[in-house]
Image 1 (cartoon, rainbow, N blue to C red):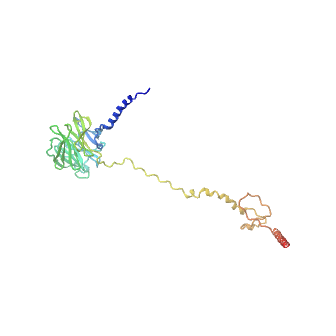
Image 2 (cartoon, helix red, strand yellow):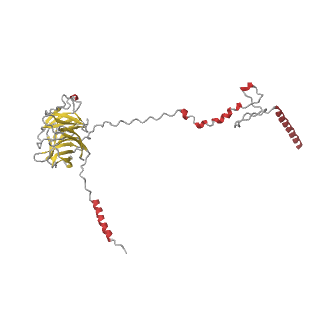
Image 3 (tube, rainbow, N blue to C red):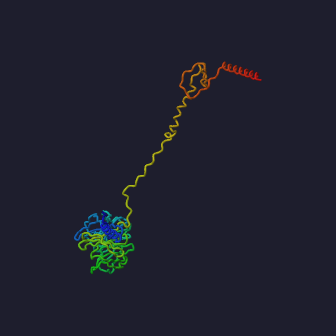
Length: 391
């Protein structure tokens, strides 16, 4: 009985449609923003907290690692890639801004007067300092609509003192700048919200304090406490409290925004980085490898030459050295030791071990010679007689 083919064709049709859909319809694209990782240092202060928490945040991923606690609020962070240090300001009970520094792991170091400044711990800033950043060896800090420049060159006599103050011009909107970034051409960039609830991205000339541009961006109305420049001209900003949480965003050079991560709300924050834009050469933590051991010295020539196989034939020549010691005739005088005569046939020599070498042939005595001469004469005479007869 033949099998029906229609069910197989009916099953293959939807599979073909699914295959075409999977090929022709593009897969959804994830919302992960482009760009390299940007690890920053950020201080977080709770709404009613007295101290700050230092943490390292890897953007755009948003991975947070707490590093240490400070007993006072820390603000105006600026990172020096050349020194591998981050500068910050703490307001003392006397109203002065005290400088602290710490490395990427949060180890704190308070500068002392012996580092080149007459009073490095008391920076004469009016009011509580706000945002800060470090660019081209200069530490920029804002306070009461003024932009201050602090010398952070350890070799300078003005180290950690304010060397210039510029009043910020008519900002649109007239709001306090919480944090900002300064580009390589000395342009300040930041995000803030005006009284109408519009969030704008502004740029300011740090030399004159004049507003250069103001552009609305699609971000919620909030206080943006952390503003950090990325490796490709982008900005990473954090709204401290919006819709019940703290949210971090990425703003590219075309003012497009992307939400990165959401965290619990906080009162204040400030950031510095990216830490790997101009990294300091790492200090060697592992000692350099030891040089390879020297090869062992060559063996002495006596151990290599002559080859042992070349010395094996020497014992076979020993019988030749024993030839002068063979027994001689008893009639040999004792004074012939210097030149021993050939052995005599008279007297039977003592038996010796056979040897491949042959001694001198024994000399024939006089009587034997005479017999040979007589025999030769007889042969000659006989031969001549035969010849005569044949003739």
